[in-house]
Image 1 (cartoon, one colour):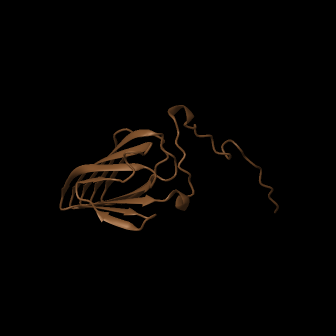
Image 2 (cartoon, rainbow, N blue to C red):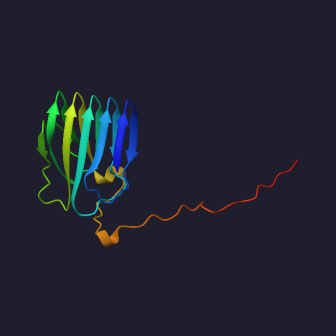
Length: 158
């Protein structure tokens, strides 16, 4: 998943179970990415976030360990954990309290200039998912939608 937003606003739902070196690029816009819909496979994941004059919001499950490293120029990183109600303004480095023992770890490499990055850590019970950890062999394949190939004749009366 590479997300590119330029002079616009976009919202994305990530349904990927694994990502390596995925990128979110926002230039004079607003990007919101929801990582709550699909459980991530256990292991390490890398996400790159670049914002220039824009804002990026990432929604992550709170069982995921997060490590942030990057460069900020007139930018801010805001982390909010809904389960505890804590809010932090981290600067260029931050590590979640559960990073060392988490089975799912996300490293966020960021660069921000004249923009903001917000990370919202959502409890599993709020978004209805359980912290299911998938191995690479257990990642489900998407099933076709039930309406594909189905047609019905409409009865028309005049």
